[in-house]
Image (tube, rainbow, N blue to C red):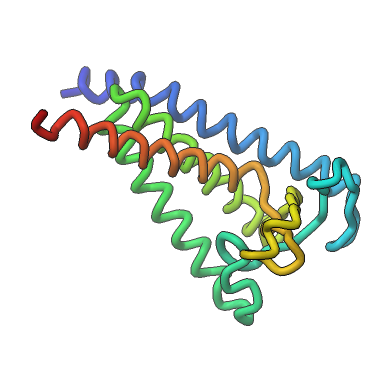
Length: 175
């Protein structure tokens, strides 16, 4: 029993290290952005379709509930803590499944990166702003909502989870 537990812990370490690397990268980039851009709305055009812009998000993904009056902050902290606990539990049970464990680690790292922002700043620091004229169809001004490294990791992890589930479904389906 103790050997199983230590084996699980050793097996989880690479995936927890990946999550920690995401958190570290996210926090380092955000710290640098906060030294370059001082006020929300400050921006640096990098290309014709990409701008670094400082945005504070008190809401969820894509600024959902951003102007909800403040009650959403504690809710999102609680959700991030609960989700992180569940993800660690899932990694403990599936660390041998590389794609699934990597996906979970990316989501965990992203969730923790944004959680640190909420606890430290009271909001999430976003700064990546992509804009193309064809985005006018979906987003006013052609700007995709600003996001950050943690959000990118969460999206990549979610994409990997979908990929893995589709792959599993194909393996289970009769030929």
